[in-house]
Structures are given as C-alpha cells and as structure tokens.
Amino acid sequence: MDTIRAKTKLWDPAEHLETKADMIAYIEAALEEGDPSIIASVLGDVARAERMTEIAARTGLSRTSLYRALSPEGRPEFETVLKVLKALDLQLHVTQKVPQKDKVDA
Image 1 (tube, rainbow, N blue to C red):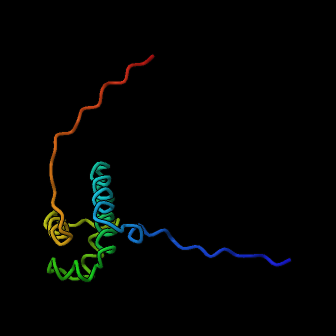
Image 2: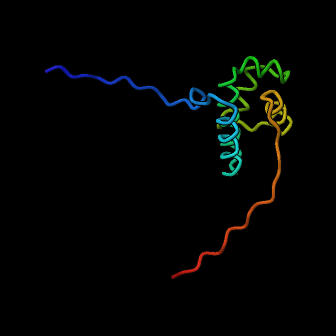
C-alpha cells in the first residue's frame, strides 16, 4: 500500500496581510500584547508583506539590518520602529487604556 505524504510549510503571516486594515489590526494586536519581541516580529511581517527592500530604501537602513532588527530575537531601536512605521505610511498613536472592571467571584 502506498503512503501519501502531505507537503507542509510554515505559516507566514506576511502572505495574509493584504490590506492596510489587515496590517493595522495586526500591529495593534501586537502592541496590546505588550511584548517587545512580538512587536518587532509583527513589524517584520508587515515590512515583508510590503516588500522589505522597499521599506529598507524608505528608512535608509539596510535590508539585512531590518531583517535582523525586526525578527523575534531583534531588539530594534525606537528610532528604527518609527522609521519603519513611517515607511509603511503608518503612525503611532497613544490612547488611555480602558480599565478592566474587577472580577467579582460568584
């Protein structure tokens, strides 16, 4: 009996970021999470979706340094984050966090 082998590949979020709204929602979710490594990785996914070479040219940074900085292990400078957001035609906004209501045990 022949065995059928399924071909799989890693899921790449960049392949599913088709609109600016998708990208914004993805970045906002990462910011809400608050983990710097997730934020860096998400910015990298969005930059790849928008073509990293073009983002690198717009930021004045090398493509290699952007890949490194915007990886889960990367620790981008805040200036780099702002340059990437600007290159993506996005900007950072701050709003007051809505306090969560205390949970009452039943």
